[in-house]
Image (tube, rainbow over all chains, first blue to last red; front, side, top):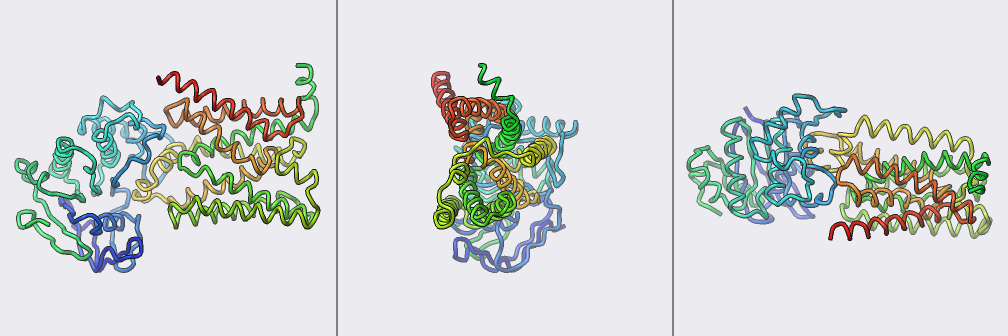
Length: 226
Length: 271
């Protein structure tokens, strides 16, 4: 089943055309790596899908409810001095269209589960500003994952993280896809590291290379690199 | 002490006190959101628009609230709309709108009635200005805001912390942005006659900044900001009455003192 159907998508960023006539379908349970150089339109593509960027032309058909989509944006450092604990932040992922006065028992069970999965139980009462880069990304990933979304979209989640921590994050994402069947779309600079982690997990990875136009769309095994 | 007790025997003081406490709570609540979203300057811009609106009302003998409420609300929407569209140009928009509004007010005042005692009161605040109608409006506003913050606490936290995440989840962010501007506009209009149009923004910004220095949770920041705001208002009003200073400036002087003390405390404590 298609979760998202994109046809003829053209979008501009800062006055120039960043994406031109892109046709892509995102199917259930896929693991998609979105590759391309800096400024190739990856972020614009992702923002268009989640409704943060208005396209010039084309249609983006979302076949699932927006509450089933979670998005992790790039360079999320702006809120470092925000007075909030890890727990408060992760719980916001439980909010859907209707505002919740109180979180339910089930919400807190989901919270415990995701904290166990991402191994962040020990930091739930810390302030967001006290965390390291890797911890912060895991917290934001937990927020994105807590309501078990069907589609998880991440815009370069590993930028600014060292290789060891990035690899851990890749491992988690591959597991999420394999075990929970969550569709993952990840914008990424270099697929080699992720590919290494995947050697034992054996997830089928689809690579989409965008550089204004669609340059490649297929299995990672057939991908020759940028 | 005698003087302070005597002060509260005047009905106009009691009215100003009730209005002031209500406005202080409202300003503190919306201030937390504005400061954390880095919209602190909106209050300042709206204060200047308020001044222009009051000058207009004064020049043509119109009821002040009837003129300033719609004008300031429209201005707040315009500022929000332009900030949204142009992203970082929000600051510039506010600077232009406030300079333009102040200029308009000053010119209008100069060519109509001149700078009389009424205008002085508008600019720097006066506790004499509060009517029974003001009491009703300000208390209603603060009660409505308190209820809003209790019932929508989780949503307010989510949207304040990360708008983009909320938007990607299908939450109507535009509605919240305009609600925030609308509330800010109401707080500015209702508070500006006590605080003065030039200083009303301090009532919004200071409690949030001081409480942010003292607490590490969002809930704590909201509650502390409201408490600080009310205490500073009462002290400021007493000083204003006892040594006959404009109310707005007296309150801001207390805020500045408190900010300096908390900053020093933080510096020593953190080292």
